Amino acid sequence: MISFASVFARLAEVAPTTSAFYRMVFGTLTFAILLLARPEMRTGLRANWAGSLLIGALFAADLWFWHRSIIYIGPGLATLLANFQVFILTAVGVIWFRERLGWRFSSGLGLAMLGLWLLFGREWAILSPEFRLGVILGLLTALAYALYLLSLRGLQIRHGHIRPEARLAQVTICCGLILGILNFAEGNSFAIPDLNTLLVLIALGVFCQVLGWLFITRGMPFLPAGLVGLLLLLQPSASISWDMIVFGLRLGLFELIGVTLALAGIYLGFRSAARQRVARPKPSPSA
Image 1: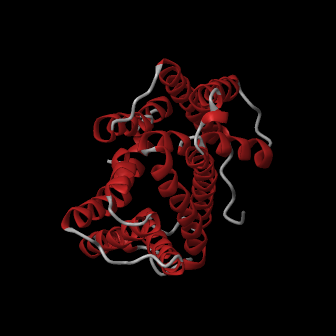
Image 2 (image 1 turned 90 degrees about the horizontal axis):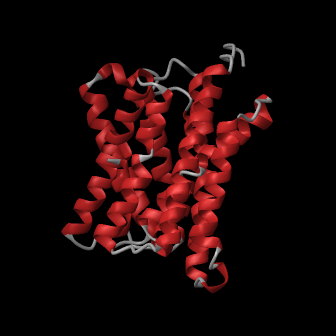
Image 3 (image 1 turned 90 degrees about the vertical axis):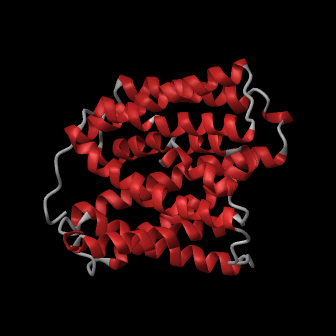
């Protein structure tokens, strides 16, 4: 489900910020239906909105960068770059929690950097300015995405009484408000031009913003870390496949090797981050 997010964002015939805004709008409506149907999911809905505003602001930055990267370099490569967030998360663990770098992180980072060079670095000087901007925006997406995940996890630990569904609903509403303000400030229209765009935006909000991530958060605690990391690689892998099928992305031999190395590096990064989460002591309630 989440692998289609970049595809839907590209298919929507609206400005990048507008598609991100409607992702939150239809996501909010979906959450409203879920929370009305399942009252237990509303636990904590009135609490810690200030924290959710911070998380929503970081998520808005993530989507603002990502939707523009999608326009410049395509859904597949933009999604691949966004998944470099795993290295930022691990680096924060090293700096903040004084964690040791294991061979998985070091090997994964090396493979990912080599893959990044094969994809973009070899011919950086001859790439168009728009493409180079798309790569930079993709890496900024990874940074914003990592900060979003860190803030979400940290505030959930501090406010453990809030149900994940309630927290995600809060974040979706806050993110939507921020993106709506940005869309207005940019002078973009809020009009949805046709039925096809409406259906694409609904799918973006329902399947990618709500259902996909609810399934992921529900399923992760019951699976081994290695399998979780492998399954999460389906998002960038599938996004690249959809980019080839729908938008005609073509990759040469060096680019294919680069994608493979980057995916392998990201997987090792997931494994390293998972081991650190298991080894890290849980914070006390006063933390």
